[in-house]
Length: 218
Length: 285
Image 1 (cartoon, rainbow over the protein chains, first blue to last red):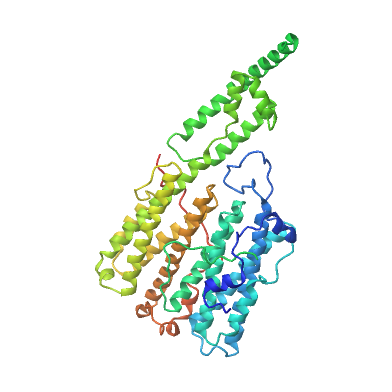
Image 2: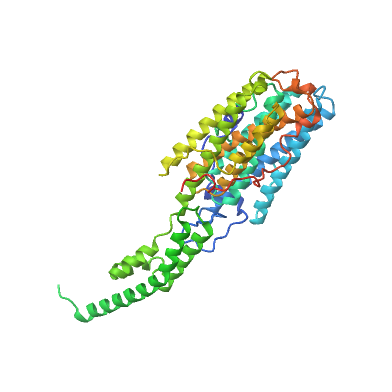
């Protein structure tokens, strides 16, 4: 089945189950998110910062999964840039060229942030894209022949990323990690708004940001 | 069944000791509790104060040997001492109070945004100006209204009173800008300021909230306000660049957009929170 919409992109390859890996998911990751480490775990914290009373393994799994998504975004923008440079996408409007370089750089910063959390907890930095989504995106990217197609694929990725972060917020136990996810969600939503505009679509299509497109670990 | 008088006397003595120690400790703590109560009366939740209080409470429980699993058995022995220690053992309910404050402040920001867009739509250069700008103002006002209603409903769900007034901290910002709203650029600038405040406030809130349902609601609304802000940034750039004709939902526009249009909406890789409103600014006392 070919994925034609963001929903297809997620549903064709990704099992629709809870985002949170839980302890089982961590087994392969073996990492802990930065900023964890409670000095008193007999009561729920109320200090408003780094709430460490929860299961840190879920946060670590989310950080690892998020890093894989960011690798995929960086690679996809890099692929678009290379294709544009090689003249494979036809004429590239200046605004689109700026968008691609800016968004790629920002996703690299997001990746660095997630990898910072992963390595601080003792894990290995993520350098490979999410293995479930990567082949789906590659297939779609192979069909891109112009700037409009590239912008459409970028929009799908940004919407999936924003939805994934939104979906994860309530599951993230450490509040600083939760803020990091929300901060990146905000930037990805901004990317999506401008891509909508470039594609002659209304830039704020939803009254409430949705989680339907959220990617979930296989 | 026979009663072992000696064992009973030992239990009673132990109980009296706990009672005595509990009363001494409670007397020492009561002034602090009164001070906290007075400090908090009519004010916002002071998280650091509550944290210190809870730490002091835990320390007291440890001193009394009532920490962890010992608590239930020993408190059951202690009569009044048990009541006091049970009272002390109850944590301050700051979490719900703060969550309600956050929701009230969020509602107040939405109220202000709605009023601002409503006023803007009455201005002749918006009402009769660029159709996309007008449609954006109308749609955005409607979206803010739904956000307000969602925040108000969630406030009541958590046991709080819904906020219906605009945020007092930012009302002066709008009032100060109002005389200068003589063109679309000025309106877009003010609207972008409010959208940025909303976005950054909700982002900051996500790091403070305890109720997970509210976290998701806050993130969902933040995801829309940030798109409002991004759109307004792009609109501002086009107006400042003398290209209002490019504010259009037209497939031919993309090729004509200046390079800066591809990055002006997101100058930073991470959303900052420097313009976030404090949770107490729109809270009801």
